Amino acid sequence: MKHSIKNVEDLRWFIGHTGGFRSGYVTDLQISKRRLFDEGSTREVPAGTTISLMIRYEVRGYVRVAKLTMTGVTDFSVFEQDGTDCSSLGVIQTEFTAGKMRFWFDPQGELYVVCDEAALDEIATPFVTADQAAEFARWIFQGRATEGPTVEWLLQQLDRAGLPCTWRDAMRAVAIHPAVQWEGDLIPIGESRASEGYRVHVMGYGPLEGQGFGLMLRVMGIQDRRMSRILEVLADQITQQFVGDCLVGTTIIPGREWEGWLMREHQTRHSR
Image (cartoon, rainbow, N blue to C red; front, top):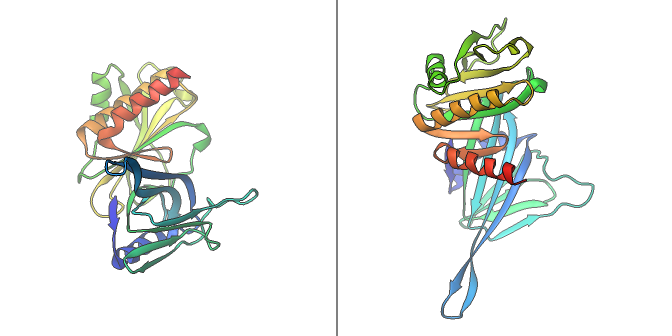
């Protein structure tokens, strides 16, 4: 979900949608300052400041990871003393005056931004608590199409990649969340350790706001090359066939950039 915030009506929507990020927390903060070379003065001059926050919060039964990008920043404060933690949020406050937006992320003003406009990118998932201790990796995709991948489609992609799996429906006495449409486990054929928890748990859910679909893939068990390969193959095929965004940890990645991001991650690991 993407939404531009440019006026007071957008701010009202923003606060209503996020609930003011009540009880959320900031997982990442980035400050980018652009400078351009001025040929007349032969000096570099400021050309704008952008501040981006990654915020994780829960509202109305959903876990949301939001990227709030504030552009045209004219004033800001990022101040954290020893013994204090400005990453935890209560309810943020906003104001629109003289064409400028003001965001107070804590009552003391230690995290404060004045900007021209902002943009909200967000991925939401049903709240999941089960088996988190046994989870090795998690990958989430939020697509914009009306219909997303089916179980049969996932199995076909794995067959083509030489990673055949069987499907086992999840057995729950009570539905985990009303938005969840189906869920179960992909188990590699011939995997003798499947009974010990080596599997990829898949959850498909319906649109959380408007149109679209969600897909959550969770690798269960300890680190295993074959299971990681299954996750990579499915992620690659999903991002190639469907338009949307990925969530890895607390990083939102446009689907079209997934392959490049994954390649950079592999290069970083091998260089260590």
